[in-house]
Amino acid sequence: MSRSCNAAGQSMCADVLETTSLAARHPLEFTIQYPPRREYFQNAFRGELDIESILKAPELLLYLHIPFCASKCHYCNFAVDVRANAELHKNYARLLVEQIKRLDGLLPENTRVPGIDIGGGTPTILQAGQLTEILLALKSWGRRAGAPHFLSVETTPSIAASHPERLQALVEGGVERVSMGVQSTTQAVLADMNRKQQLHTVDKAAENIRKAGFRRFNADVIFGLPRQTKHDWAETVRHVISTGVDSVTTYDCLYRGKGRRLSEQTSGTPSPDTYGALYDLSYDMLTHAGFHAQYGSVNFSRIAGETGTSAYFEERLFKHTPYLGVGNYASSMVGNNWWFAPYAVNSWMTRIEAGEVLPLGDVYTLPALELMAKQILLSLNFGSIDTVRFERRFGIAFDAIYNEAMMFAVGQNWLRKTQNGYAVADGHFKDMHLIRSLFYTRQAVEWLKKVEQTHTHA
Image (cartoon, rainbow, N blue to C red; front, side, top):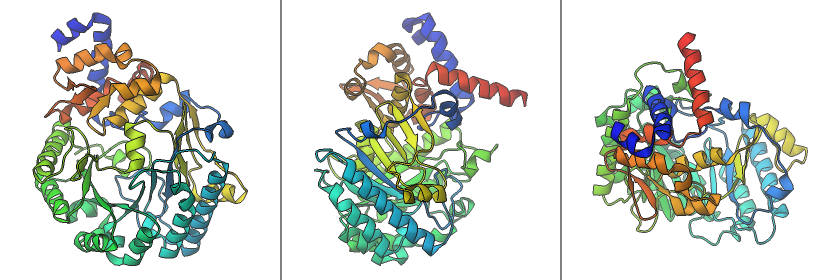
């Protein structure tokens, strides 16, 4: 490390060494999700929102959150509601339609909406008729898309296997891409994660999805789960490949975040080397099976010219397109404003019933460096940093801010220089926590150091 530091300069060297040392001590803190903890933004960047100006953005992605699940998986920290209440589900769907229509009526006619995702929770826990109502409300949004496969919906193996009529309702409603959350095919791993209802349903679910006629079929899988062995992970990847999916998303399991049971785990968590070995295994298996991806990307596709993710996430993570979220605790980002809807389902429903267009929970107004950190870490989902897009988004050259840190990362062989920016070097997924740390703001690093000191003295 010292030679790269000396080349980059002593002041930068001190900051980089301090930050990467912190990341080496606490690798599970330095994930793809920024900020380091929700409390960091809550303490420092609370703001206000001018809704009228927000809705004038020339481009807006749309995310619909349907929070209901049969159970909450231990790796999940999304706003999930496990109440099996048919009337609640019906009313939530009705109010979601109401909010979609209100927003559509307020957007300028020429607003472009290049991607729409319906996620959760489990969207397909709703009845076929409820899904149809939501998709009918989205028809008018579709005229703004101008892109193929712009509408994507998530499902689970258990529902896709047992409710083909819901899949048919999705296809008839204009959904061309479905993403099935497989996560693992190992019975013990699934049981540990409170996901018992999925067992032995993946093949039937895949068959039903193919019969329904979706244009694109994706599967999500997670590596680094508790008690997951290399053999378990290889079997999961092999099984998913055998279902004939068009794309695969491989998530590294997160162990921090409020609401996530795994954040309470104090032992047995995977090391960076373990994450690296599991990622490298799936990268080799998927690319040998005909999928393509930049090394370091979690998204793999069989289709030439496609990243494998949804239009919504490709625009949001890679192209920095602003987005609106509807539904409880859905997040939105336009300009330097990042905000959430109310967390509780009943609170969100009450405020929609009262006529609100965008009911607000936490609202943050972010300085430029905080926005940059969020965006760069998200772009690393694709294993690369596009400095041309960065300059277009922020109006400043990437190297004007990060040149010395990049010299250091290239010197360590973590990153390599490319025509359009930087890419994760082959074999260095194990160093992702260190790479991510290079983009944490000084303020965020100081905040995490205080958290570390508090825990040390507790």
